[in-house]
Image 1 (spheres, rainbow, N blue to C red):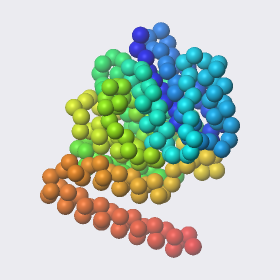
Image 2 (image 1 turned 45 degrees about the vertical axis):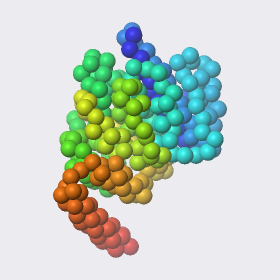
Image 3 (image 1 turned 90 degrees about the vertical axis):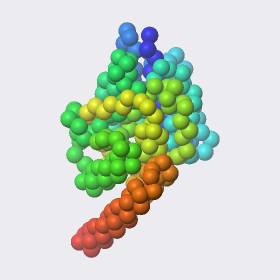
Image 4 (image 1 turned 60 degrees about the vertical axis):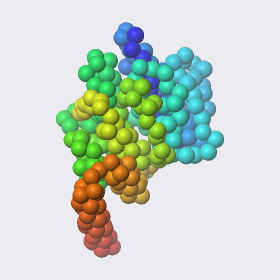
Length: 265
């Protein structure tokens, strides 16, 4: 029996947590057993209470808790350390991503076709909610920049849906506490001799009014993380070239933001 450890980082998700766990449980079948680890990152609402109740109700659910809020990366790190399955997958508690797509990614590892599988919101997949233009531009820029550094050809580096063989993930030291986890883990996986696959997925994003947490400062942190976890492993000439590219891109981005603010008043 193949066992998948599903790590669910959770911060103030009382409205969706129980439904998220129920949707994840639906992907278990005769060939796949689940271990669901909910990591509450010191929520101010009833998320921890719900997580502990779910742990009592279902043998496959484990509830973990941070005494102080540390961020998504820290919550994932806690979950990864406790996972015991054949593979480890990430599932956000807000249901922006459909767990049935996650099942397809896990199948790639279960069939021994991949060691790491990523879901892409930009490849052909299921339905996508139409939201923020500049978020889309930012995601594609960060993926492009990450690819330049890692020599991968991903289409969605920032995707939540990432599945890893447990031995690969637990051999990596994760340092980022917030959303910098995404570029950090991609950089470190890229340096390993592993098979990486992407697959198109659906996406039902939230607005900020609905609870979306990632913001512009996280985008700048992602740029820093791409540099931090890649530059030291590149030849000097490439370091100089890419540093110039980054400076030019940042200057252009600042100019676009300035013009946008002028136009909207």
